[in-house]
Length: 207
Image (cartoon, rainbow, N blue to C red; front, side, top):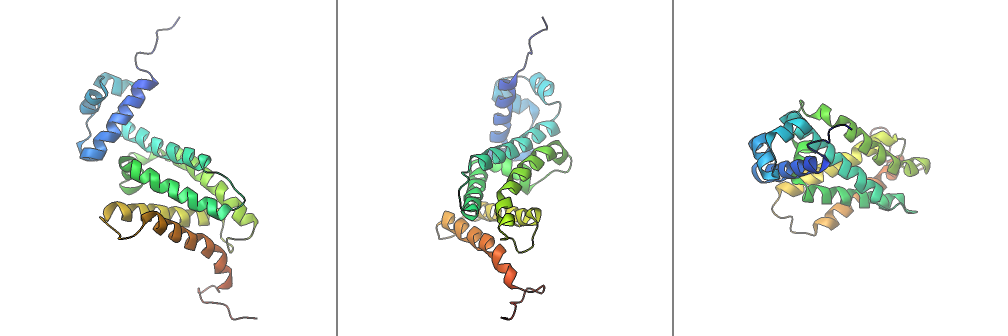
């Protein structure tokens, strides 16, 4: 029999949890492997054994971000109204950004070019699931000639922008969930309305 692994998935999860909490409270610049290990109740040897470096640990946090988003997308019900489903998917992204601000920063706000390649595949996997949510709109000709990839990019850009603005602002003086719902309703219904515009973005004259 081979030797049992000294550091297992539970240790890895504990280290990721500790690193996420540390970044949330102190920022990415304060992250050290020694302190992460101490907070997780283990040793730096465990960190190096499981991840190999600080960059790899950050990459694993980035992968965790997109794994959570993938799980959230898959858990969002598929109904007979794909546009409403996409609004619910946007609200899922909002909850992710609120509940995991450190992961949002690593994955979307302050993407380190040395770390990004380590979670590129997880991001690609999440994007593929998002694309699936747009396929019913494309099949119903509700994207006004956009590709699924183009529509999903516009949707994601609004998700990221809304989350970043909400995190910076102290108060909007309004119901923030309603603000998200209204914004994404305008975007998604606007995909179909664009079919009534010419290439310059001007309304087409009636026939």
